[in-house]
Length: 332
Image (cartoon, rainbow, N blue to C red; front, side, top):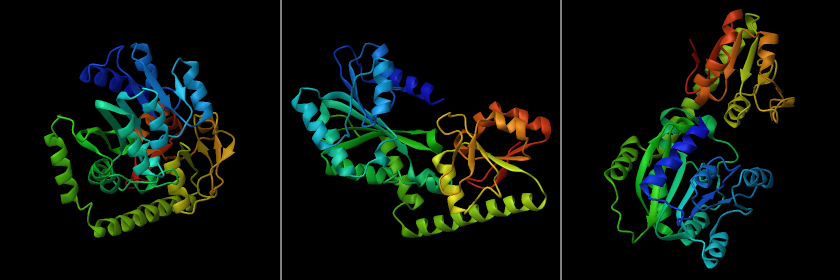
């Protein structure tokens, strides 16, 4: 799903910005090249900026050029001095991970050509609160971003957010379009509408966040109640997906392997290890068929429909799927 999302984005933005062999695209936090490989295939010059050596190596193996560095004003200045300013700078799910968001945004301005476009995708704070997604709060996230906050950060850096799209990824994300402050492109009605929507929703009101804590407590208590009920009924419970959000939920609820006996994950790098804090073992997905649990909790709730399709076989022994977030729900 994510690879399709990347390809669709590449096609759409190439057409919208009329990118050609004479253009230059930078992706910040380019990972293993999953996005930039589409620009490479289209013959559009590009550069990934990625501090993690293993993923940078993987990107280079598929023909994506990578600069191994953290992005900020210093890296951007080196690029600009080398004549490498970009027509498009994109960053998917990096903006919330940045310790110094002002330095990062200053870097965006320095590395952007006059008339260039910035695209950032990040989970939307409004969705996080509206859908009770407290489990997306974890250590890699330094910020939980609203359009109101991002527009202010851009303005401070000499940039402007002029348009946005709402996306279903990560439980509800924004893709913003930014430019230099003096760019002639008009700010769209979608921008004005979302700023008003955020204000109406209460994102600038402390009471909204206090109520969010109470909703998170209810999820935890309902989930624990469900697990204890299954334990009393001698039903076995496993989980699927050793994702960061699942780890947040399990440690918040104080779970150990007496209530969830094991977790399955398709990533070989996670198998035969343990979840941090709860020490619940992580096993390959074929353990589901071997152990036949009565219940399987889908921890990465945002991909629950994919997990349901891939593991329909649990119905053959009467197994059921359940999610805990945004509320406890037994899936059909």
